[in-house]
Image: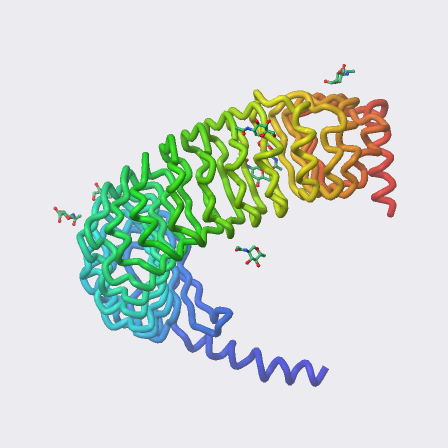
Length: 450
Ligand SMILES: *[C@@H]1O[C@H](CO)[C@@H](O)[C@H](O)[C@H]1NC(C)=O
Ligand SMILES: *[C@@H]1O[C@H](CO)[C@@H](O)[C@H](O)[C@H]1NC(C)=O
Ligand SMILES: *[C@@H]1O[C@H](CO)[C@@H](O)[C@H](O)[C@H]1NC(C)=O
Ligand SMILES: *[C@@H]1O[C@H](CO)[C@@H](O)[C@H](O)[C@H]1NC(C)=O
Ligand SMILES: *[C@@H]1O[C@H](CO)[C@@H](O)[C@H](O)[C@H]1NC(C)=O
Ligand SMILES: *[C@@H]1O[C@H](CO)[C@@H](O)[C@H](O)[C@H]1NC(C)=O
Ligand SMILES: *[C@@H]1O[C@H](CO)[C@@H](O)[C@H](O)[C@H]1NC(C)=O
């Protein structure tokens, strides 16, 4: 008891007292964060002005202001908080950033102004911020930026410009960002990416331009980004990728090309991608996968081919995917699953498989998959008899049976699913009475009595 009190007085009381001595605006909550930094969090909404030093101690290190219904402008007042390391003002209707608003805030590492109403950004906005690591301007209304807008941010690692209205990247748009690792341009109607722009970001590892209305990319861009490891070009308008498209980006580990209009993955397209782990080609128009398309992808663990127009998947085409763990071929309604047996036998190591929205599943189809832990067979008109298809998979932990034709849980069905930790059964014409569900009710009783 005495020991506890001692501990309390030594550790907790000083913190309590120092908290009470500190100033904190009524709209905010102030505390010490995990790294023992004094922080002010103002998320009640309805703020009309920024915090002034009369209300808040000048040595605050973290300020987080979030709407809704805020209407704030930022200006030189911020400079009084000289120790600021993290500043987030989001969802607050900020119309602009203001010239030199952050001048003198030399410890500022993270600046997040996402979800505001910022239309213009200029180099004046960031003067003095040569220690900033992260800048988030996503979900604003930026239309275009001038050349060298970010020139003062010479140490910047992450830049998020997603979901603005940027129509073009100008020459030297990212001038001086030579340490940038992460760039998100998604959700801007860019239509094109000028390769020259990427000359200034030679260390870029992650590039996202999802939903940018892109039709093609000048391969010169890849040539300037030798360290690129993650590329997200999902939801664009690519119809065809030339076999040399990715020739110069040899370190890619993750490529997202979902939601484009690709009708073929040409042989050798990924011949340089020996490090590729994750490939998403879902929601395209692929009718076939040529025999050598994935030949060099020996490190691939995740392959998503769902919602295409595949008629079949040749054993030849997946023969080198000896590390594949997850395969999704859902929604290829033209595919005849009776012809998939031979293909599946080449990838018995799979742990995750999605074959949803495909129609009838022949008994024996899943025979090779002894190690499967996750199986999605929703939307396949399965009835209680057809559920026999899962019998070979003894290691299942997750099973999605939603949107099928299971009428009640028969004894067989109950036995089949009782060992599986997580089973989804929604949207089946289940009849919930003792007669149809009796076995399941008994199982539940057994489990709960344990
Ligand atoms: C955002 O800015 C535009 C023009 O800059 C203005 O017309 C609009 O009212 C602003 N929206 C809000 C919610 O303040
Ligand atoms: C944004 O910049 C343009 C061109 O420099 C200028 O015409 C416009 O008035 C600026 N808008 C705001 C809200 O400052
Ligand atoms: C393949 O993956 C393994 C394990 O993640 C890794 O050690 C190896 O370097 C990768 N091979 C290539 C060519 O990237
Ligand atoms: C692809 O491989 C299959 C065997 O899986 C073979 O029948 C077919 O002729 C091959 N196609 C081409 C174009 O080589
Ligand atoms: C395909 O299945 C995998 C594994 O369940 C999942 O991670 C992925 O999101 C699915 N793809 C689509 C488009 O739903
Ligand atoms: C199973 O697949 C369907 C269709 O692709 C999808 O809607 C559902 O979310 C998936 N289930 C899970 C648990 O991911
Ligand atoms: C269950 O589904 C299988 C395969 O679709 C079908 O052959 C069989 O007639 C169905 N059984 C019942 C009772 O509807």
